[in-house]
Length: 392
Ligand SMILES: Cc1ncc(COP(=O)(O)O)c(C=O)c1O
Image (cartoon, rainbow, N blue to C red; front, side, top):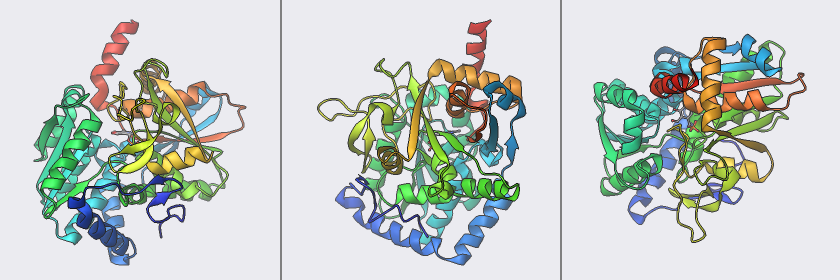
C-alpha cells in the first residue's frame, strides 16, 4: 500500500506527470508494473532478501554520544553510510533493477550528481548483468572523481553533460533525452524522489525501509523521537526516514543547501527560495527567474546542487508538516570535519548539512533526534582536506 497522501499522481497541488508523448506508454507500463510488483509477496521477498544479503540491512541505529554532548540534545544516527556502496541510494537502485528485470527491460540509464546514485546503479547493473549508462554533469565528474572511477570499474559507461551549470539538472536533461530516443528497451532509474509520477512515490517506497527499521528499533526500546532530520537534495533519504512517521507527531526537518547564502544568488535552497513551477516532469518548488526560466543552483555538495525538490516535500512544506532550514557551504564543511573528529565518522558533504543544523538548532535538551546519516564522505576527501588546510 502506498501512503494515502498521494491522489491520482498528485500530492495536494504538487506532482503530476508532465511528459513528452513519446514516453506516455513507458509511464503507463511503469506505473502498472510497480503497483503489481509492490503488491506481490514474491517481489517483496526477493527485494527484502537482497537488502539483507547484498546491501547489508538493517543498518545500525546508533546513539551518537559525543555529538549529542556537543549539540546539547540526544542525537541518534541512522547509519545509511554503512549500506553497500556507502549511501542510502542502493535501496532504490536494487528495487528498480529488480523491477526492470521483471518488465523485461534490457538496458539501464541513470543520472547522478554526487555519483552515489550512479555507483549504486552501476553496482545493481553489475549484479543483474545489465548494461548501464550514467549521465553526469562535467563539473560533478571533476569534483566527485573517485565515484566516476568506481562506476567505470563496475562496467558502466559514464557520459558527461556539458550544458547549463554542468551539474545534476543537466545530467537529468540528458538522461530524459536519451530515454525519449530509446523508449522500447530502456528503463530509466531516477535517483531521487523527483520526476513525473510514479517516480516520487516509487523511489520513496523503495527507501521507506530506512524509517521502518528506525521505528521498529526505537519502539523495541520504548522510545519515540521528537525530531527526524535529513538533508534535502531531491528528497529521497529524507522521505525514506519520514514516510512511516508522516501520521505521527514527530517533527520533520529537511535541511537544504544554502550554498553561499540564501540571498547570495548562489544557493540550492529550493523550498526556502523557490516558487511553484514545472521541472523534469513534475509540478514542484523550483528556483526560477521572473520569466519562469530555471535558475542555476549552487552548493558545494554535488548531491544537493539541484534547482528542484520532490513534489511530496513541496506539499509537506506548504501544509506546514515539514520544517525546512538552510545551511551554508562553510557550515557544512565544518560540521563534517567535526563529526569526523567527535564520532569517527567521515560523513558525505550532503549529510554534513543535516549535521550542521543539529549544532545550530535551539534545543531545550529534552528532545530526541534521529538524523539520517545518508552517506560516507570518502568521495569528498579533497574538499575536506583543502578546508582543513585553510583552517590551519
Ligand atoms: C550521501 C547522499 N546524501 C544525500 C543525497 C541527496 O539526495 P536525496 O535528497 O535524494 O537523498 C545524496 C545525493 O547524491 C547523497 O549522495
